[in-house]
Amino acid sequence: PPSRSQNGIALLVKQRMPFEPLRGPAGACRTASGARGGGPALWGISLSECKALCEASGACVAAQHASTPKKRGRVDMACELILAPARVSHTLPLANTVCLLKRAEPSPPALSQQRADSPPPPP
Image (cartoon, rainbow, N blue to C red; front, top):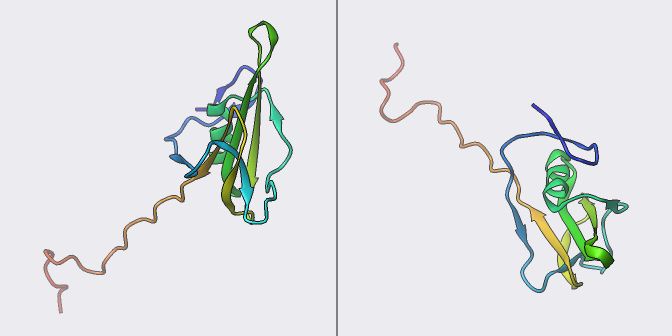
């Protein structure tokens, strides 16, 4: 069943697909040409919500999340989804920002036509 975050975005409750950080310094996602590769920033989105939005999008290849401390204990949070065909190659070092690659879903194991321990089909 779906759950609702405090800012009203419906999130599917399902097994989470793992994400992995890029090797190198933490920072903003960048393509080989140095381009951002993402859409507009979604403000007020937590890291877990950002990852869930990326998971729900078949076109999302990476999630970028920034959390900037402000005065009086407030924190501004922003999420940016990096969508195919963009390919993230590196990060631009940036404080309080993380770029997480979405791992491809594993392919189901190939099914053999006949298992080795099963009897041969009848003639």
